[in-house]
Length: 173
Image: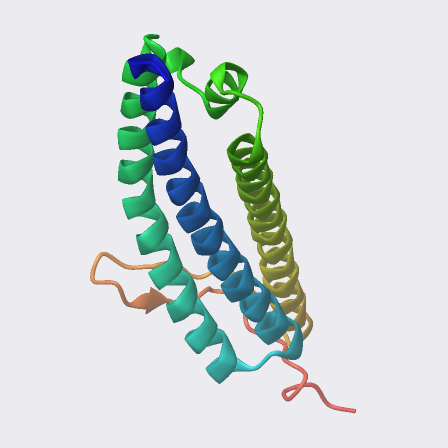
């Protein structure tokens, strides 16, 4: 093996380790988002708070993983002798000798992409569920007679609307 081949193999090992860590982080975020979704669906406030705290920890870990990803991109750029914007796992794969490590790297890359898609899908779904819950609450409050057209004063206190509320409790049958 020559020096370039050794560098590519070492970078492939580094890349493989990084992709495995990133996949595990994304999968733990996916699990936390699924717990958020279940808590939202069941209207369980305690479970929701716990799931949101877990989700926040996952997001912190993913933020630090972005720093690691930048290091990986820089290492790929040096190894592949290309600008960082062109340094990709796909390019590394194309320069590797076909074999088991190439298959492992490809599999790890697919795992990260799949987990990222799942996380994105759950984020969109949870967001839609939250919007639906907010809309439901607004409609319920409106049906109960809450006008929602009061404003806040400079002190932060609520300034009541001049409209007299007609709540279900105040209505006579």
